[in-house]
Image (cartoon, rainbow, N blue to C red; front, side, top):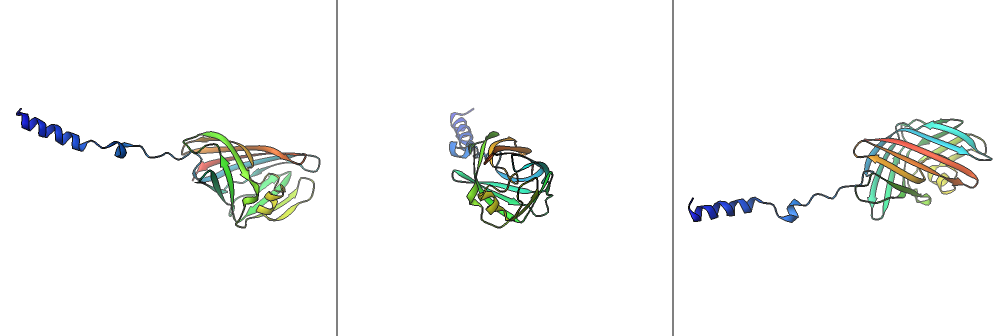
Length: 188
């Protein structure tokens, strides 16, 4: 091959190679980010005034969006089933809350924590049965006063299978009452 022709072929090949900036992979969103649908939710509440186990929640729509170091959780309860059993928790409407999730990289497990006084849209909660007083009113008010008692995830952990499923397990105390909440979600 002629030297000039070989140099042209080599140069043409170099032009086709992407630069480092072009070849860099896109930043991967965390596994928890995006839209989900609850397939099953459970809550167990054990205490002197309250003692019940409920399940249901199918159809709750949840969207988790990163905003700086926080995560905004948008919940749409319209058309979802109530949590029933030893008590009844019926939620309706749309609400947003702020959380922290363990990491913003491509994590598939970590910690989750609700910032309870951050609700700001207007979903409602009707909680009855299970001992103690019931609650009827805005979900954000119930959460801010620790009166939701099993309605939404609080502080605990999440595990996630990319683009498939996620489980949020939270456990904590409200006074002397132990509250355990599990949500199973599928990608919407």
